[in-house]
Image 1 (tube, rainbow, N blue to C red):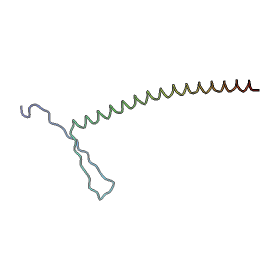
Image 2 (cartoon, helix red, strand yellow):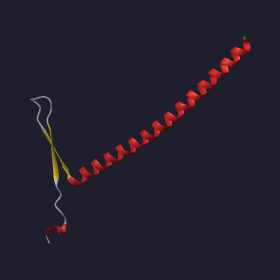
Image 3 (tube, one colour):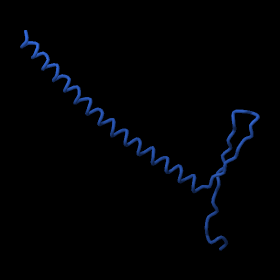
Length: 86
């Protein structure tokens, strides 16, 4: 068995075309494994960010409800003080 039984690593070539027609195009070659690791890391980061923002949104909703309750309580107290003052 030649090569120790390892699979040949595939490479991806990305062509970067600049907006200027005078500038040369660039080729970036990336191996299969680093590309998969980069995509996986990006997906994990997006997942964590979405879970975190969902948890924060729930917390904000709960605090907004509490604030509304407190504002109603302050208005009731204000009405009572006004009634007693008159």
